[in-house]
Image (tube, rainbow, N blue to C red; front, side):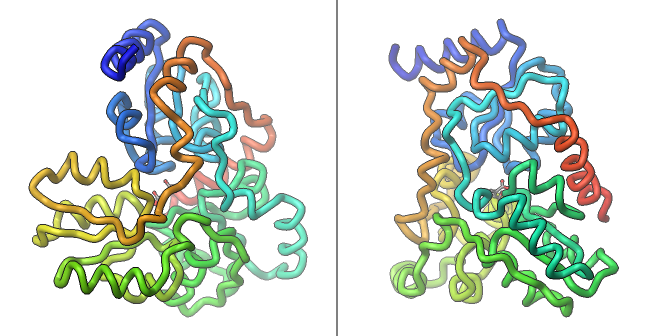
Length: 302
Ligand code: CIZ
């Protein structure tokens, strides 16, 4: 089958199986194009919960499909590639989190959504890259144990007077961006605003014109009067940015902004997952109940 036939078969089977296809902003273009919704992990998990479909095909990485299952436990959640994981999420394990909590009994524990369901079950509240500062500020505690991303933790610490205890994790993709790349891009595209993800190292975040998660970068790019924008997040975003803003030009801050896990999902894999309704994501009931509380506490913060 060529790509067009594959995409048509995906759409046919999706209807037959009463499925909805959700794709993360970092997925490859052809996968984004067959999806019903494209977005960030939390937005997609909410779409999963709202949908009437019986089956959720979640094109993303493991922790994202887990969040969808937590918010939509009655649905079958399928992650087309079982091995599509998140090295950042793997940098915080349950036992380590428990030990750190003992070291800092006074601290509130805030975790980025890029964590496993088991870790979400151990913490006080979740956050996304767009609401992290707001979540921290809303808490009564003056001390915050923040995990697992040290760059996002550093960014928060610059925006609050609270004491942020920072975990040693990082996103292997965003952490690669080097200051020389920022200098080079400014030289090559003078005047073009640079929008970066807070998972980038502090020197990159400090030198950027806009800092935000994927939804924030999409909004910034839509609203800016600039015709050329430099993007400092995973390259999959360029597909959506270009599709939604055909009159503008987008350049990637670094050619190394590629997440290999996000690139594992192909149209062929999406079709296979619809045919087999596998691999299915399960979250143990008690873990799901406690992890859901951490997500709901985040949602309750206005
Ligand atoms: O949570 C997400 O979707 C990620 C990984 C990034 C973002 O900023 O949207």
